[in-house]
View 1: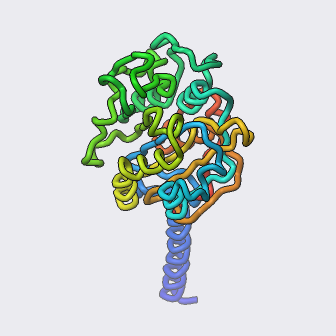
View 2: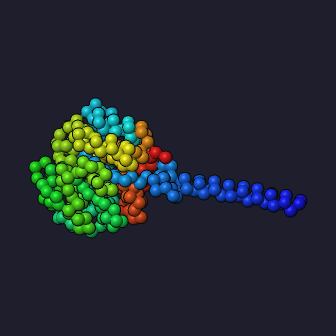
View 3: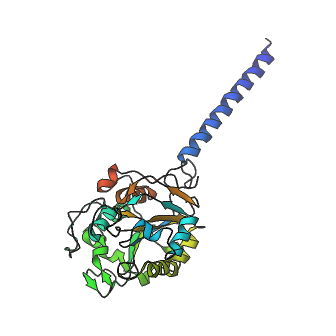
Length: 298
């Protein structure tokens, strides 16, 4: 082989190696999201700019999903994702809220009024804050921002677990009237807790469904085009359905019309919320829980 032919063959071989390397790098980038903060592996938990979690009360899956009394929640289901085997942890309400927020019931077994700041254990808010990210809760009928009162009218602190933790500033507990109309100013992670009527505890499924549409429907629409997420779930069922509850997710990175029949619980949802924030730690039982998968857009 002449020198020029050998050189040409070497160049061709080198180009093939480079091409193969580039394809491999592209494949790695696709699965890890290298060079693209919004990319994520197929099925992996995405990184929304804003996450809003709304918790309703005491209704079983069959009382809401497919019910004519909940047309708005079912529109979120068909336009987003449905978890058909989502379960609460226990009864009554209060320990479920602690489980969802901190990966543990924190020894709470009833709905009685606890001492504010009794625990310093890790929780979703403390982890988000420690990571330099933003957190707030929006609590309907809370008398004033940061108020630790046990009850006031239709407000009930038993549905607001953040007050139980000394590592969560009470100032991050806001009234629902402070929920912003400019959704780009929302914290990266927030919870919304309706009052005892709006959350379906004392009032009907229809009342709660209408409240959700009127108060967070605009956010849901906005989330669909602004890399954000709405999660609608329940604390527990009606004690008649094995604690199977409705859980619906809606947003830009949720595959419309998707559904998962995998069994998930509050700890799995907590872990998923932690992972949307890119947190390296997981609170309590969330450490051994699993992410919600099979519903995310590629």
